[in-house]
Length: 497
Image (cartoon, rainbow, N blue to C red; front, top):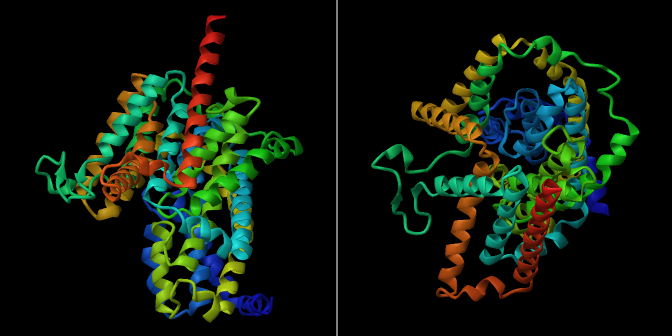
């Protein structure tokens, strides 16, 4: 308790809150613009933290990290272009809600859900970090593979009416994820002697093509049929979140927070898996699953709560075990090391005051994120009022700039265009695009852990059922598959009747 009180004393200094809010603003901007990722923002501004000290530097970086996680939902809701990969699940209901004239409601709901998930995650980090980290410590490569296998069952939930098309699209995503260097042997796969494909396809580039540029192609066909005035009228009363809305989203939001925390403490999984898992669970639990994909408040709440609940949870394995939870947190590891803080079991005993200041600071990061978000939501909502002939070229310009900025390569712009055409053709043939993204996200993690597990067991598949964690995960996967089959049988019987 004394360490906690001393940590609060170190935290409550004006410079900490100034840099915290600067980080929040930068993270929100970088998260909202497709191609300008949170990782890029942290890398660009990391040198500015070298002379700040441990607590101010981490407040600045945590501000970027948390606000960037929320910021991805802004462009997902406004222009159907996820600013970050994990905002894709938010886009499924956020954009349709915006098209119904409820832009501000969608943005406010995303902000409330993001803050809730971040706050719960911060409290878990503050009070349960050492205990919760034991769960991650006992996870091995078989368990990581089974988590990804469970994540792939989500394909059924985002396949629309045709499960077969969803499976084909997911398989296509898994295939695309194999392009590049073999993670185990280093051999090249499907690169056709093109050196630009050695590292495979960057997820951000694929995201820009699959959703941003493909949406531009789709809108180019409909421009003459849509009246901008009808799309952009907004009723202030309808845009308010009511008590009934809060009651409706309470259960999926709380469950999604738990899912995000569990996924966050497992290194390498990430917020994309958490958001899709939560979205799928919320859809299965909902009394109105038919609303999902058409502007469901529960869908937005589930996705945003989960991906922001990951933020605090990813710090648990970093601070207690020295294992970064995701790429953004891995960069923050450098900020710790520069300030003489070596992550691991001794960190809390040797630098307890600083650690409690950082963990308590995460609570205030989410509070100020909510304050900034409430103020800026009015400005963001005005984007939807811009006429399509003006907004479309601006979107394309940002997409090309974002694609080029990842590796400063013109080849990446060509890749984004190829994926845009792919998504456009898939939409015409009624193949869902989301399963392709799931395959791209989960494919590399699943393949690496699957093959590593078989190497460790000399090819014995029993390794995937050799621990209590593995058995629990196998049971969850089987239950998920049973629910999928049951749901499809129910849908087919309803169609016949």
